[in-house]
Length: 406
Image 1: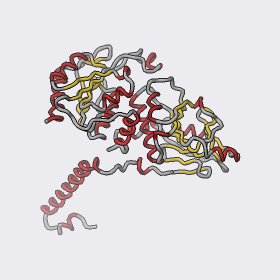
Image 2: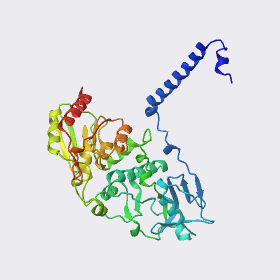
Image 3: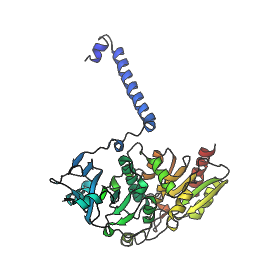
């Protein structure tokens, strides 16, 4: 390989400088092209490259890398114990989880049993339920983390070429009931606890699903999220809701999410005493400021915990501008129209550089994203509310209105 001096013939430093300049320009151009077109390329994330990395027990166990496991002709024994037909030794596989903690999949495969099917059980397998997803919920009460679980089921169903609406869900945890359980029952087939299963039934396919925290939807470093539009359609169709495709600039639809103190789950009683962080201190002032900035608008204020999911989605599918403090309710940015804008606000104790969940969702959907973070301690209050200056709302909303309607 020739050196730079040999390329230039060793005659002058001017040639060497020209070569160096050419290399720099080439690197800059390549970097620009990568960042310019990477979002327009077909999805090529690891999701589409998932293949069976290990098979065992005559094909009755299929491990998909670190993500999920499929058991064929399987039984639920009890708790997190399952059994598959196996003529030889059960395979061993190491699963790695976040933060050095053991993966639930590791526990489940260590608890796996072998059984020898009888003739009756072999015949029964032809008539058993088709596909059951085993779910260990992480934060069952939280819309964001629960949506990651829904997305996991949807993605794995795409990989396995299954009809997501028809798969059954088995909760392997013992979380208390919460309002999001009704959504599980709307999106999927039968939904039940591990305590309510018929232990003798043979399932054609049991899927140990991806765990919520390692959901692709929770990986904010992904340049894009495959199936995001298909998932949006899947959810809206399940509720019979159609989203708008055009904005009416004579009547801009603005939705503001208000956060309230309430008990979402038993843990909040001891941890937070029912207090909810990141509330607006001056809700009425914010409402009025939006109307000042966008006179030709309909402004809807939402307390999501007081609404059914159908009601929430009906509003979101017709929202042009979604406004709210950082919180799980902004997960609904996945269901707003394709032209919509998200305006997310942060108190001074939550870094927008760390909590980029909904900025990432907006990026994946190619939506305009606007952010404001408080930097004034005097605007934070002991009840965990933040005062947002009206001029901030007016300035940002006027900009958004120009963006949407100019």
